[in-house]
Image (cartoon, rainbow, N blue to C red; front, side, top):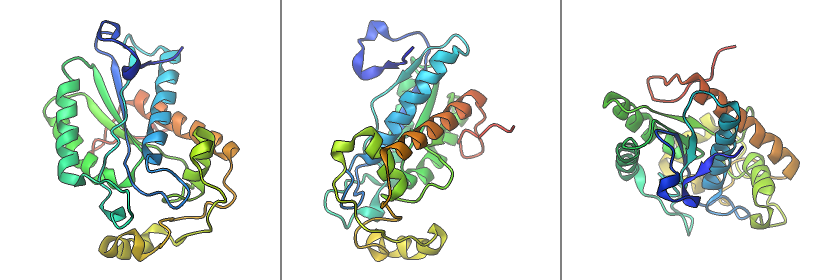
Length: 243
């Protein structure tokens, strides 16, 4: 059983007070080989997979609806690369707040499914405000153990599975592979170009569609478990349930 997609139905088909999943990504460079909508594509796939799993589980009476992705995020660190479109944290925060207020008029519960790390500070600020206003809302990351930072093996494998025609070949060589904690000071002061001229943070070589399929399954299972646990922390992020 597949969950409903808001971009494929008319208003009489919207069920009463559904759980609504909102994919949130970015429009930013992803190295010389991946498309600008990589984050949005991954967030949409994770949201749809989790929604379908929740529908099959038939937990509670609410149906599940997936909205179109929010394709613009806070991507200032990538702005030196042509094609990047960033709306910044202040505008993104305003958008999230207004989305929640609008969705709450017909949704029972709202969960943002985020695939861009640059959006995290904004979600961690806006979602607690919305919880304080009485809205039933949370957010979760597209998470998998061992995932690299940006346009590396993880995202390349995912896109080889989701949309292989959009992945340019041959795959580029490794970019900056140092731990993010080590890269962060230069990244913060000078953007991605300060640490990687190609825009790659990781090593895409060896990426495969099969690995992408496994990564997506892991991310979907993680997202599904967080939604079912329904336990937002102080930042509004849905926690991973304890064993």
